[in-house]
Image (spheres, helix red, strand yellow):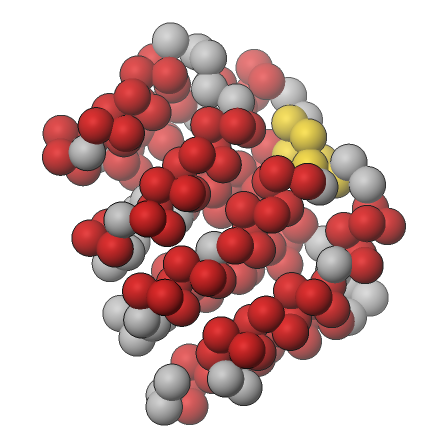
Length: 163
């Protein structure tokens, strides 16, 4: 990674993981930073940085309001758009949205799909779904466990971006 601006952007997020202000918005900020710099990241960097929001969704959060989450289906589908025609997984994800059966496990699988498909890494819209999910629809299940993970997440960012 030779782009100083990219390094500075990820360093700011890394420092937030070490601060007392660590919150779910830090995870959303990370996803936003990945989206912003997607063209400068290698596929491996992109994939590895997504391990952080993936880990949070798997281990640290619960859905705040299932009905509210379901009502965002049109937004989620809009972000997927025509890519659903090109990828069977995305079409099945859209189908789960339309059947009102979407849950956090589906969002975990969605991030894993993005990680495993470099052809979609340059798409600006796909990462908005987990970004919004973490920002607007989940609550921390165990705050102390999440806060203790901040240092680990910061080190991971620093290692991936070589700060």
